[in-house]
Image 1 (cartoon, helix red, strand yellow):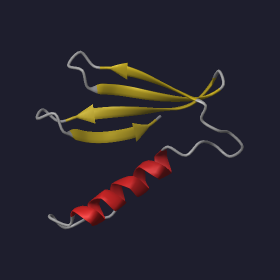
Image 2 (cartoon, helix red, strand yellow; image 1 turned 135 degrees about the vertical axis):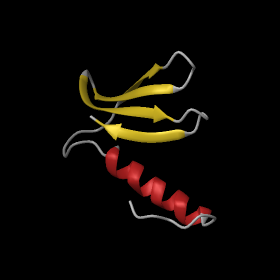
Image 3 (tube, helix red, strand yellow; image 1 turned 90 degrees about the vertical axis):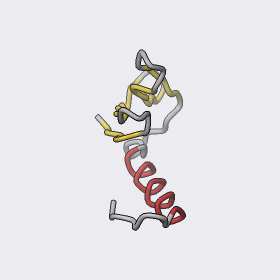
Length: 76
């Protein structure tokens, strides 16, 4: 994802959306039929697991900043 200048919110939202679409795309020939979530003690999202039936396709791990803002989303 390229850097977006501060204050250019529309571009930033578009860049975030594009990046999330890339990392949440299921493998070829598969589809996401179920999502499962785990939560941190403070109530923030820890992981999101995507399934096709009973087969887990991927996990997204969420990292948060101390101020409660989202820091990173990583696909594993």
